[in-house]
Image (cartoon, rainbow, N blue to C red; front, side):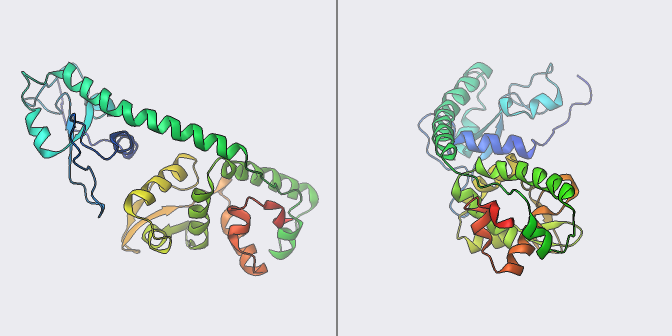
Length: 269
């Protein structure tokens, strides 16, 4: 047992744990929230097998990384965190059962939601771009047809991703592009999106999770220049594609939603 240290769970691990918590303490029949209506964490992240020696149910055979994985973590209210410190009554097996029973409920609900969304998105029609002739002219690219075809193929691959999203998520992404700005990279202040779309903390978190999952935006991070959290818009092959589509729409006075939300990329032709 050498060099035992506490490792903070990754953002992806915390996101998984929160989603599967259903925003409720995992202890049976407890309805205490994990995050309240103001976006404040009002519960505790608990280790099934302790992070450090001397802690409850510490397992010297685990690695530091294993102790910080989702399988060893569980959200509980303060009261039940203290109650489960009784290792005689709450051993590893019992806590894992509590975690599994609680998360299975919300995992099944999520599976049903995913199936419902999948069925819905399959019915969506994507009008792909074919030539980009209008973009070529409006933005002054002066590309020959052969080069344009490569650009069209690259963009259509990105447009296919949007077809996999539900319409509400595309509305959020369109708002992100519309309110983004480019300095060294294209970024957006996330509080601006939340306020402009009147989303609560849980709603904005869920939408961002989806957009991160589909590699459309980066994980949020704090930026002192903006006094808040920002995300970067992912650029395919280092090209500011969404920024150029935004510029095209502004120049032509076309609502960006007509392209991103309605999936009508033929407008770019």
